[in-house]
Image (cartoon, rainbow, N blue to C red; front, side):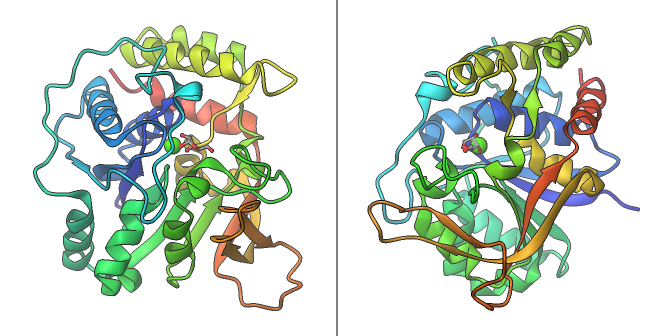
Length: 314
Ligand code: RIB
Ligand code: CA
């Protein structure tokens, strides 16, 4: 089987970094066509820098990075330096990137690439606010049936939210973008915090990562240790979930995940529940499902696979 072609839309962020490295360590399964930077964990200039640093860390300066929209479609940008640090990748020590940001904006890049590729060839993975993909869908609706699948990290249901009581960060930052994507009819798989909270990164795993002896392991271990410090104040254990690599793990090993097809709506008006993913898990609305919602995860197997793939990088 030829590797699956993917575009990763990302706001690095330590967990985005693990996802990107996980994908780049799996070239026999995934062909990363490009990264597109979104504004989310940090402003766009920072996420665009971080994405290039990660491409160079993985020895893949050949993969292009396109910068996207600097703010959500309607709301003002909010960021999460309190989780990721001022650099967005605190915990690692990477040199300034040598590769340049592509001159083309990420939104026309997405449109051009999806229109030129054979129908159903490209999977879009969104790891941050979905502004770039939503803007592309608004500008050129014909891309929707051409996308093989959108796999997004975002949302929550029984777990509630992580930025408000009701909303998860990626959806909350740009709820209107999520509304566009969830209403587009695209084949959609959602990896919410209900699933990613089960992807608990342990101190033992970080020690094994550091022990790989490659530069990727050292830098990723530094990011993991920084990222865990925030978690120590949020979860009862020192183990902290890595959200975004679950998207890549699902593409590589879907058998490790479980979920069901549901109707999902996005709240875009209520001040209390703005950005909430209203997941009809029990099918009470009788509305046809528009999304596969993942909830279960074999976390030990997931982390073994990720370690094995990160070990392959420089
Ligand atoms: O809520 C977790 C999500 O928000 C992750 O994608 C993290 O990187 C942040 O973007
Ligand atoms: Ca992210």
